[in-house]
Length: 258
Image 1 (cartoon, helix red, strand yellow):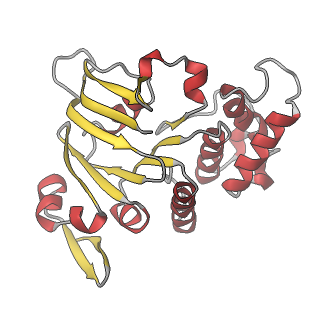
Image 2 (cartoon, rainbow, N blue to C red; image 1 turned 180 degrees about the vertical axis):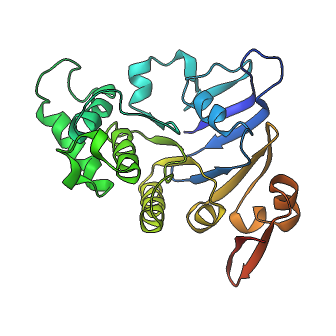
Image 3 (cartoon, rainbow, N blue to C red; image 1 turned 90 degrees about the vertical axis):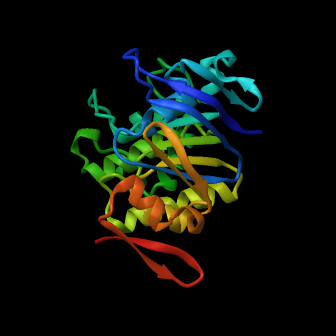
């Protein structure tokens, strides 16, 4: 039981790889944080794992089966994917937007004018999970960036997947909601879900994730427990020398700008 990449190579037809020889396994109950500099290939890796980008070599397996062989509707009931940027293309209310996620996974029919009970319940559960139930009648275009981000997370949760692939879900959230959201992901993992989350905040990753993965120059440079990965030598090599580590007894070090 895992979502796995084996010797993954990906590019966009320009010759140079975006990912090269990447191996990883995301197992139920595990929270993995994926970090690295801009352009390292983090978003491409998530798209490959979600089945939205076809790798040039290697393969993606979902519970032992090739991901490409699993029908999209079935895949949507297992994998939840949140891209880095999603703009409101239509004047949907929050409840309508989250209902789209529920319908992707089969909770209700696409063209019904009023969502059925199963769909409404999935929407309500998802909005409660992200502390956004009070927003359900608001239009997406009226929300702040942070409010919209929580609603987008809810639209993925409404699919009720077993694997969550999240590209910078805490972007535009205030400090309280960043910590609150990552603690929510931590709870999901305790309940048996699997989470792979792209983040630029190494301190959030160190506090809540089981493991940190560092992707740099298209290859996976490091993977391990936060205290093992957050080493000054590695961070300086990947991110430059304008970082320093502040030791914290019994915990992974804090990462600060120098």
